[in-house]
Image (cartoon, rainbow, N blue to C red; front, side, top):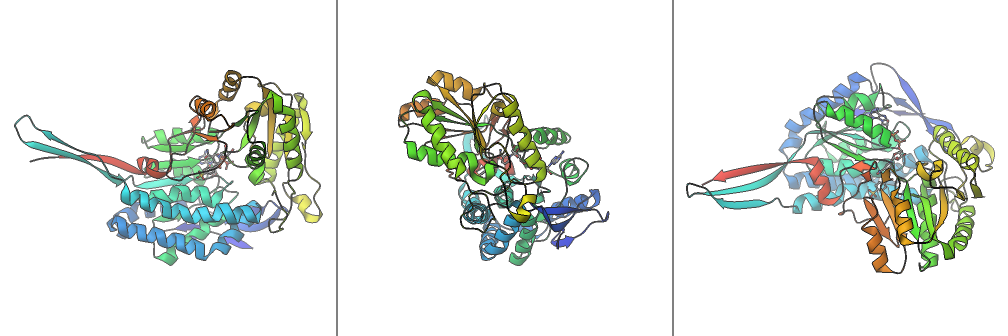
Length: 486
Ligand SMILES: NC(=O)C1=CN([C@@H]2O[C@H](COP(=O)(O)OP(=O)(O)OC[C@H]3O[C@@H](n4cnc5c(N)ncnc54)[C@H](O)[C@@H]3O)[C@@H](O)[C@H]2O)C=CC1
Ligand SMILES: O=Cc1ccc(S(=O)(=O)O)cc1
């Protein structure tokens, strides 16, 4: 049995309370690890180590030296690619092709991309004449904020954690990471990488546990934490915002979504169906950017429903390492119960179940896993639960529309505003819509196509702030103005 320890000040440590909880493989419900829950003592130690590191070797490094270390981290993750892959797959049950093409490569790349950003981003300067006839030059310098708390979800554990740790370290901060209690493995493994490349002690720390009355709350409420970056549910983000208010600490929040796709009759049909298949069902729908509302222009409504039904039914569930596996389980029995509850709500509220709606029949011990059928509904009003609430499962409701104005109103009538994908060959119409849809990200004839220099984040209740490229620097540094008179 794996023993999953906290990583504090460069060392793996258990805890003083003796409290542990189980790491479960969602494929078959088996216990794969024993996680040592960090209490207030361990969180205090991690924050203290991170604070001390700011004044130690780490704080004295030049930007170039810091970047060299980050590059070494990326190289070491890639050298240990298979260890990360096995760990991520064991925790999440996601198909091998997904973890090996998305999660782990991006986990490494997230340490490299911000090297260019930090090295090449200038700050502004202004020259002016003073009232007494002298000259004044003012210029900006970016300084690290200090200790950053990084609170992470379980859907893309390494990818989303490094998306924050990479820029935080590039900017000279130190971090205390609180991975999701469901997926502790890769954040823990990253500690070995940090030690292997010679990262100074205390720069990267990991504390395990839950939210309320546990590591998550102890960390975000800690007075020596100087900034909090969070990805997870909107409800949790709101609790974290309140914790951050105490001490007036900045927050960056990437939260829930109820993303729409808008399909016009003139779309490239095959590309649209291929893309919708990914956006609705990939990672068992556990992607914050995933599509759960599909609006289709009436002339091709039936055709889209039929094509997507066929694709949903071809998503073969199975073991992560089986070559023909197309979909893994949900992250946990708890999440499966939530998704099944919403599947039931759809039925109770009168949905037509085009396909799915329950649990697939799995062989042997896989019966104990948290599997779910890809599901499509039609026929619900815009007020229905599964049309308004985030599900985070492999499902969507498809409804017809007749005009651009109608679909725009429907897309925007939701409290979330993370992402939308528009499918049409009329590029003027697509751009018109993209500028009116209230989201942080809008794709045209694409989905999950990312240039990591661009801003990522949500509008409305999907988030506060943007990360990616120079936008990450906005959060992970404090911009100081210096004015010199001569
Ligand atoms: N906008 C985005 O980029 C993304 C958003 N998400 C959202 O994340 C959700 C799935 O992730 P979950 O792990 O279920 O989210 P969650 O909000 O339950 O948990 C996220 C993290 O916050 C911690 N946490 C929970 N309560 C806390 C508290 N009171 N104080 C401090 N920390 C606390 C958890 O232990 C976990 O590490 C999705 O439903 C989706 O809404 C997921 C991925 C990306
Ligand atoms: O699931 C949420 C999510 C997925 C991807 C990204 S990124 O743009 O690739 O960093 C962010 C959040």
